[in-house]
Amino acid sequence: MGITLDNSLNTYIFWNGLTLDGFLDVSLGAGFSPNPGDAFDILDWYESLSGSFFSLNLPAGDWDTSSLLTTGVISYLGETPNVPVPEPSTMLLLGSGLIGLAGYGRKKIFK
Image: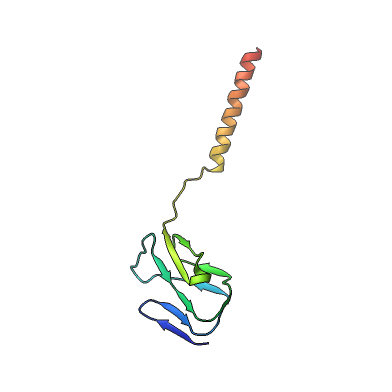
């Protein structure tokens, strides 16, 4: 298998068939922050591609890897939004309060 690393683009070029297996770890250069919509061609191959990666370890954020096994490209979609999730204890407190109010109202109606 012939492998060439294009240092200017950090793309691995495989001159013969390529069989994927194992883990893919991707890291960004020091101080580099991608912008949403940036695409990175990290694998190029000639002839055939087979197999897949067991695991992808990508930098923080949302990444589109749908083209990785067809074109060798991954795209940065942006930061993962931090959506607040209610704590179970908050929901328990709210639920018990509603049950208490329903019981109090029921007691008042039937008295």
